[in-house]
Image 1 (cartoon, rainbow, N blue to C red):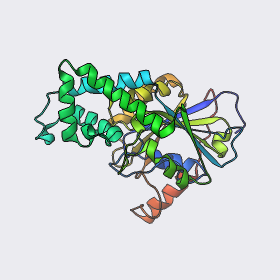
Image 2 (image 1 turned 90 degrees about the vertical axis):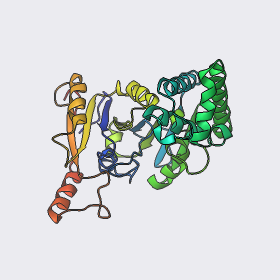
Image 3 (image 1 turned 60 degrees about the vertical axis):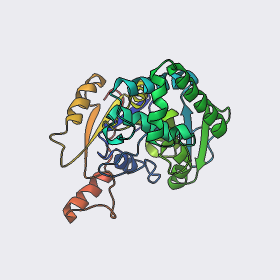
Length: 307
């Protein structure tokens, strides 16, 4: 395939655990650059764009982390507080009765602000947000926004982006953990990350082909969906992933096929995977299935503009 003047952006979409990471890693020749989870876990918490090397890039791998603006963070935090109180607030002592919306809000606040006593756990967050329902609602939002500003300054200074370089995928992902993963200790900034742009030395990306990976469909949290939708507008082609066991009944496949119709003929492909990680250490099944997976892994479909 010759180099193209039109930028091709392939959106890789599917349910959580459908094999998006495995599909990306099988296409690239740089190691496991896309985080791999399992059948039910989600490791794609941020919107990720994989593209070619920068002209000034000396290292094999480079990642740029972009953050939401203060205005965007204000909208997010206001929405979190609104969503929390739109549900029926449970008694703080009965955390298991919390609604899904409240749990997602608690998850986000604990992830970012766990070093503050008000957000050190879900019980503390319930007590803290109880104040936001009354006259002090604006004060709670303002406090959270200020905390977010302080955290970003403390972590990345006044830089609008963070640039990370590495010689291999494992090292790069290790350095990215504070920005794209749940941290066991200390706060994580991933809810405030707008985009992570990977620059890799790969034959596909060298031809101007970009790959967009967004959080799986099981994650309906507002900011993730809002942000992913912004970047999906740039998609010119689509790869929809699903597992063999549910391929015929996967409603996400049908929904995505309808959503991607506007891309045009021969610009959407469904990728059927066995699991989210394909390799000797995880593959189960017959030798024939394993051989088939390896053949598919080595086969690349060439996508030309105007498809």
